Figure 1 (cartoon, rainbow, N blue to C red):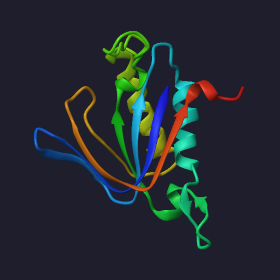
Figure 2 (cartoon, rainbow, N blue to C red; figure 1 turned 90 degrees about the horizontal axis):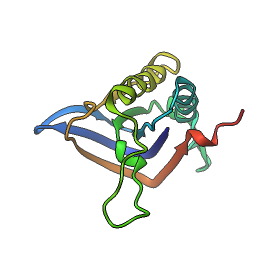
Figure 3 (tube, one colour; figure 1 turned 135 degrees about the horizontal axis):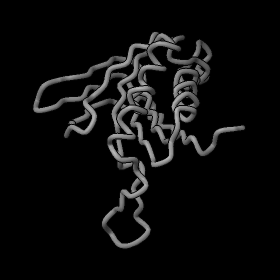
Length: 151
């Protein structure tokens, strides 16, 4: 499982011209699920996102987490995080989990952020064609991968 976390001052997702998810200060998170991912990866990465300290404290150091600054999350399912571009110019997505596997894990990720960490989480719609608009604050962009889990 991979997530791309982008600190933002605002973010929104539209489907067919309608805003379906919108946040102010917080994280715009792209979530990719690969074949073989398990609930342990979901728990690990949700904790990492919730506790990631990339907001500035009073001394200007990145030392505060989402809860510390009243931040929110816009979570977007993104199977293209598992693209493979090593051969040719057309990406392969064979590592990405099938929708029937990925969707429940994506929903579980959002649920953990809400229920275990008390975060406000907005989402797009799994599998939909979405337009995402956000202002990357910093810019700060962090890539988290469950393959880096410590046993």
